Length: 328
Image (cartoon, rainbow, N blue to C red):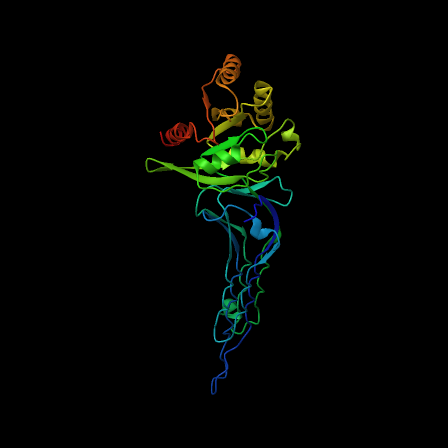
């Protein structure tokens, strides 16, 4: 399934049905009086957060959504049928913005959370409503109100327990595939991953969700590389794995570049718990590994873990750490 994390849609709630100006007509009843019923309420458009969805791709080709209008009232005091609400399912983590794509309407963070984004029009009243002691045969009725209609933006921010970040081609997708049952596209070139991938890792009867975030480079917050569209997905991750290719030159410089990009986007991201992991230790010798890690530790005072995704080395330890961090 293709991934889409932003969509613009037009929501058109149903109009309310008009009331009826009707009079009772029966044989031998000369003055039957008013019996016009009310119209039906217009259907509303509702957005519902669904745990089974992880993309907004359903809104790529269909952008206009219209709820049913209310039916008009009838004689014999019969009310018109109300229009059905239209429920649109979206992934958990979907934010709803006004047409300016800046003013937040609602943030659907939890499963089953819903919001009426466009309210249906009020029903019109039949003439029976306007009968009084001085006006026994009113002809007055009211028309149904128009439903709300406007453009809105949907933006998806992936919600995961752990987000894997790092420079392009660090092995993020490979790590996700071995920690979980996810099957992301994997190849030996930068920007293989162009959309976030999600997977579920389990250990000791506990589960966590892990997201593979597309590679970040210097200037990402300004749209360089894959741009800042993926930085927003990191905001929702509770913990971060910073994956580093130990065979690369300038490891410390690249690490600091990514930390700088995160800070320029949001300082709150830097406050998240970070697990630093060096990957591809099977490619270079032990002396070189130790030399690089020791130099890195002098500058970055954090715990360092080393793994080889290709050789399945050190992965169980990482999985245990992640599970414990989330479920402690």
